[in-house]
Length: 176
Length: 119
Image 1 (cartoon, each protein chain N blue to C red):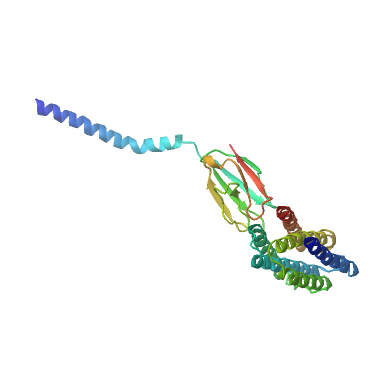
Image 2 (image 1 turned 120 degrees about the vertical axis):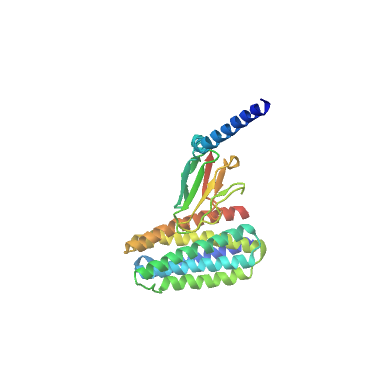
């Protein structure tokens, strides 16, 4: 019952993202706004991972969290290098703000959990988060990005995050 | 007469040694050439996959894994008996094949990345 409640909380948080995205169409964001969303989403997942390393004692959770930090930092490094090359700065926008606000709520919730309750919440959230972000990247961002180099980087990023989604799926199954 | 015989034997011995010394430097490279040259294999790590996914190798062959992705990877034996360690983007690592390596391997960071070494 407790776990069901937690999963429902994750679902509610994601619904907020999706409904917000519909109110302010993410497909209408420009390249620099999209870059900002991606950078924000990467940093949010890095933050969740650091929280997992601090709270969880499960080696499986730790391995996944370390991979999230390693990979998302690598993607951010590439993104920043590309923006520097293009002499452009990412632009804050409604979606970045919404993702950040939702992440604060989730971090507050996760910080209060311990043991298996934390592990299950973290794993389920990682799966849901990657599914939601991958959907955005595939359906709203990639088709609308104008700059070829930015589009190419997002395609590479999507491949990476789909692997993360699969990895999160394995982690969720492993915790059952 | 007896001392003379000993001298001949010595001379023959010295001659044999001299001939051996003269020939040896030429014979070693010939024998070396007769040894089979180890084959060098390249495994690309790209798009979160090992290519080729199944590689046929022999003991003594050398395998070089090259990470062409933008995130770090490893090539690690399923039983963890060998591994490349952390391969950052554009880094490579070469391992000489031994008998114990004919099995599956994976990326420690991304467990869905799997491949096999076969004989």
